Structures are given as C-alpha cells and as structure tokens.
Image 1: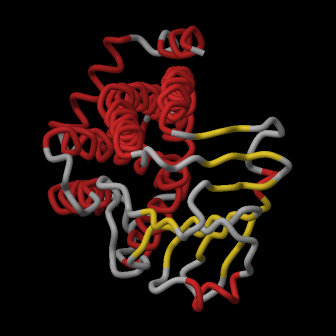
Image 2: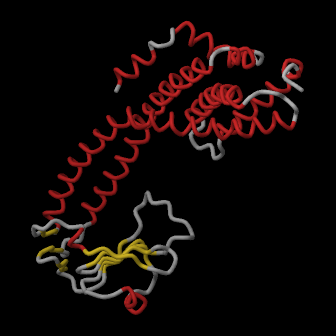
Image 3: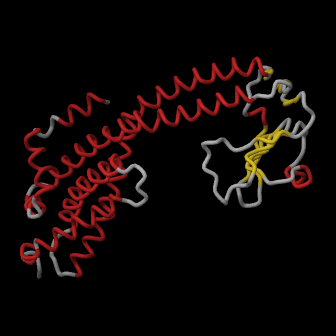
Length: 298
C-alpha cells in the first residue's frame, strides 16, 4: 500500500504540488485561478493531500493514542493482578462459572473510566447463581452496567432493558481456573496477546486511516459544495456545480491542514476547527475577491 501511495504521489510533480499548496495558504485570488485548471488536477491534488494528511494522522494515532490506550489497559490489568483476592477462585467448566465465595462480588469502575450521570453507580456484579434480569432488583442494592451470572453475561442498555449473552459463546470450551496464582500467568499472556494486536493495529492504520480520510473528506467536500453552490445562486454567481466542487476540494485540504495542526497544538480543543476553518477561508475569499466573482454574475 505504501508503494501505491508513492506511485500516486509521483503523478504530480513536487514543485507543482508545493506551488499549489503554498498559494492556497497565501493568495485568496489563487482559488479563482485554480478553477481554470481541469477538474482532474484538483481531484488529484486533493487525493495526494489526503494521503499525506492521513499518514500524518496515522503517526499521531500510532505514537500517542494507541500507546496511551495500551498503557491504560496494562495499568488496569496490573491493578487486577495486585488487588485480586487471595481467597477467591473462579472456575469455568461444563459451561458454568463457579466461585469459591458464595456471595455477590461488586466490581467498581476502572480508574480510567470516565463515568457520567447516564451510567449506573456500579460497574458490574458477579453473582454465582443462574438468575434472570427480572431478579436483579431483589439481589442488588444499586443498578450496574454489567452483570455476570454463572451462565450468562448481561449488559445494561441504559434504557431499562438488559441484553444477555450465554457465557458459552464468550468463554473457551476448555476449563479455566482463576485464582491468585493463575491470575498473574493469565494476565501476562493477555498482555502478550494485546501487544501483538496493537502492533497489527498500528500497521493497518497506515492503510485504513488514509483511506478513511479520503472517503470522509471527499463526502464532506461534496456536502459543503452544495451549500456554496446555493450561496452562489443567492448571490447570482454563475458557477456550475463541478467548478464549485473543485473549489471545495481545495478548501477542504486547507481546512484539514489547519484542523490537524490545531489538534497537535491543542489536543483538548472541543469544537471542530475543520468546519470553522473551511467557512472562514471561503468567507474571506468571497469578501476579498468580490470584483472577480462579479464577473461570474448574471
């Protein structure tokens, strides 16, 4: 896939690409000049830009987001290993989950879990009995997000109903015994498996993220072009939809560059810099190039 990216990048000269991208950031009148070029030129410029921006976003995901998520999971596994009760032994055999402690076990929310008012106060319960969801109110003092019985796994849909999955569809067929000693071994194996999964995810990101950005931004460019086309109609600017879409493709590239740079500098920003940048740039172009746009008027 990287080879395909390279081949596509070679379809436009670096000097031509740099001339286009630099003028988009520095010259409002260039947005009208670019409309004289064939639509294929703008579309190719858009695809190349989205590939570059997709790879840049992939680096951020692989270097910051994925490692942080992996570390969070490992920290929670370490806490489970440290805090696992010495007297508790849970066994899975004959499609039944049994516990050495014949009482309800309350499972708190992980420290990293961002709980809000929509979620129940308790993360989950394990009860070594075969009960139905109708009996939960008589067994538990507070509502929970999850309930694990000796044969089923219940999930609260937060609308008053419970979905359930038989444990036989979740757990392996072979018997498992989990206690203080085996928990450490199991968690160590789980970490190794997660390491392989996260490595595979990082590799797939180099393909999935650029393709996803191309598809999403192409669709957004089309939708925004419809709004610009209607704006032109209201202002009696005669520009067909194909040329309007061509203009939108360039606006999307600049807006996405600004959005990504902003996300690096201010990772906790709450509003969409893409939409703000897109319409701010278009507004500035239309305002400063009124005379040139008037040539398109009826």
